[in-house]
Length: 106
Image (cartoon, rainbow, N blue to C red; front, side, top):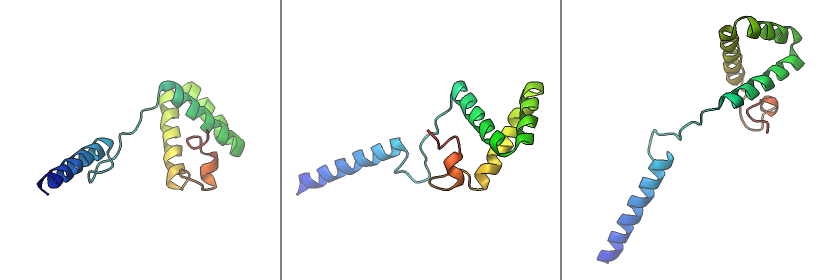
């Protein structure tokens, strides 16, 4: 009986430690977000621009011109568009908008 309690305590301690490392067991922790490489960011931006081109030619031309003249303003505008798209439900699994989202297409 005494040994079974010790074994159960050891199993609980190991399981809790493993879950905490993965960020799944401890309250308030989330798994670390992976950083995108510069190449992945460029690919993501290119896919987003292609999607914009197919839907709104004027916005596409404006963004391309902005990219050439002021790269910082271009990045700010793209960030704004991404936030708007995600706030409108553009990111997620299975939704109609999610099907063409570059982050969900492989």
